Image (cartoon, rainbow, N blue to C red; front, side, top):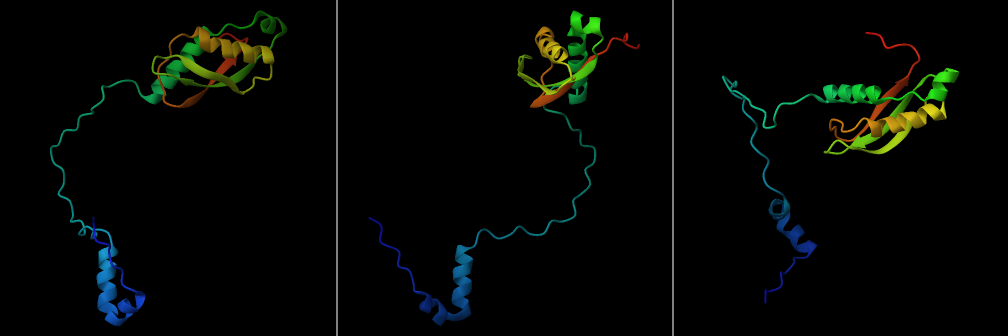
Length: 148
């Protein structure tokens, strides 16, 4: 059994004066701060190598996702017949295997038929490049032929 720690009353600290307070403060303080840093020597001829394998940047992957979704787009015949156009912004996540989850319309195109077709486009696009977190991608419905 450990002996009980005896605590001194505050009056004892006052009698011991400043030295006693300094000692008690030092005992309760954390580790001493590190010494001030010296000026670093310049790094010369050090080759850095990325631990992860090289691959496309996030911007390149997002552009590939946009391209694949636009390629998988099927314009609803009724919307084409009555001349509906617009851009639906979809929000979703992509898992490590490339499957899209929690697909929702973030900003409507203004036409429910186009919004529904945009959501279906994500399923038709197949596996997509992985990007961490939720992303928003525009799906453009235009009756004009695409420009080269």
